[in-house]
Length: 127
Image 1 (spheres, rainbow, N blue to C red):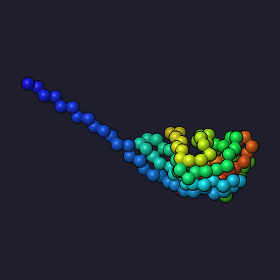
Image 2: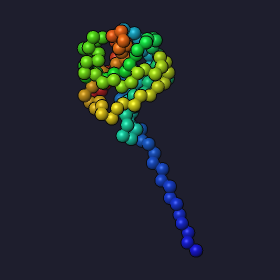
Image 3: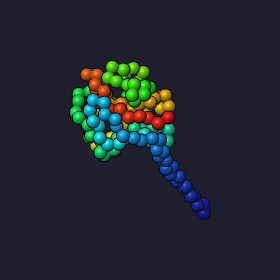
Image 4: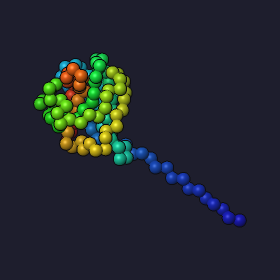
């Protein structure tokens, strides 16, 4: 009699917290915290459940190479990479950071109203 054994291996997705922070108001207040986590080969930007900001027609999330004190509404998107459109004005949300993005080349996380060129809030990235 032949006995066959099946071995099932489950790989657990290891989550590494890369960095986190709070928002610095430019034109409008943003509440809550954010974090960048790495899951396997992917990186995600996550806003916590306390995330809350004023509604606007065209809020987007960018990474900028400019320092927090140098970025403004006029230069917010210059040299920046768009991560995503904001999904909601409140609550927990997650955004996949494109694999082509090297976080070490960016200094600031932005929430920016691109349509009206209004820089909402910023956050300093750690190097």
